Length: 617
Image (tube, rainbow, N blue to C red):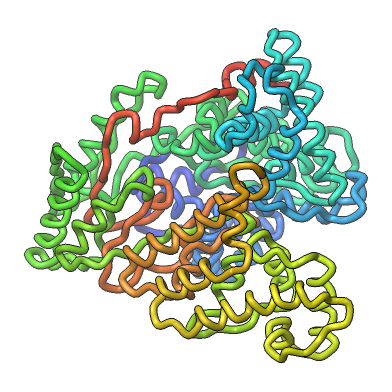
């Protein structure tokens, strides 16, 4: 027997040594909840003779999964065989293994969010806004398209497919739900025809495989004796259903760690009710509360407790206690007359911390609801000579093609591979015909060189008209010109202004939806790059692309994936900061109706209504 970590407190130890059956560990920030989950895995393998291959651990980002895997392996090397995944990557893994059982020709690929929106927008082009109770031209507005997209996404998370959504609309006399069911039907059909799926779609496929009584369900659920979930408060309805179907036994070994006071992803479908209804979903559940905060100082914990005390929807619980920390912590607040004044005040405090108290700049974070309006803050910091490191990144189709081209302009520049190069040439930014791009890719592969080298050579390519060749060569000349520029900002400006179709997008975007989407996406990329250039300590092509790497298998949200730059203050959104720790934190832009943002607009999504129509998982 291997001894459990001696530094665990009594509550942590009870959770780690839990004998079996469903357990919900409710743990506030700084209470060591992830460490308890890691110790639990080690205890199961070392002391309860559970085979590591029979354990599944689920979390919500690739970064978190990698960290958990590393911690488990460091604690007990043989436990490195435990399957540690995100919900989406787990769902995708079983769908790939059982694609035939779903009637799919092959395993589906994940379609990026921007292309999901483009598909929804295309389908809505055939819809009459009046049938949704909307004015003419409503579906020309990206915000309305986003509303419909969110409605379809949330409906699926509540296990409402096209037919159930239509039925709910008819029963409740809400015509927009009837139409949304029809749009969802067309959307899923078109994805299925292309052997594609979205992030929620892959969970829906997994749920179909796990339907009770099915052969695949018995095979998949029989793989695991224990399932552990970190950050359980961030699960949505379909993920909860997946967990229930995965562990259908009368008293399953389900070990979930979460905190209902840290549920901040409701806008992405997270259901805090999953925590509060856990005992109903898994009868015989035991609860253990971790109350001792080992991370934060007393004054900060007290402020947090006061902040959540007014939440009447949250069950009453004993407040957190604080471990023996000599420093009580400092809580300051400033009511500023303007964003500029706020920025100056924060800048002064940063100087005090770094010069007066010796706090490293990289141990200081400034959190905001959004970075789009952070210019006054950034300018104020710059005026005091304070470098800022920020992870900002774009995420759409045009943005990906711009990223492909931008990557060829950096210090470690390289020509893109033939397929990404051809895709970039075909994009609305370059407007080379698909036939010409295919011919260029084929010729490059035959010659054993890159598409860009082929175009630089000036050689004629059979089957490619001179006009198409010239457009493609203009792209390469622009990339090479951008590569010759010294600064990151100059590279971005040269690339953006020199691409052959940029001007055309500006000329056509008012009349053509495709041009408007491409331009919006591209401008988002450019503005993010400009913000990065303005705010980053040492802006580089590689740093910008790395900082905004999209974690396709795990999430459709851009997240920082690189460590903070040395010697720079970290500027993050609140959501991007989750799970990170700093010595000093500023919360900026606390303005009513903007932090948090109060929803405005059409607001099709009504969680209560969708929940009422949701079937039993």
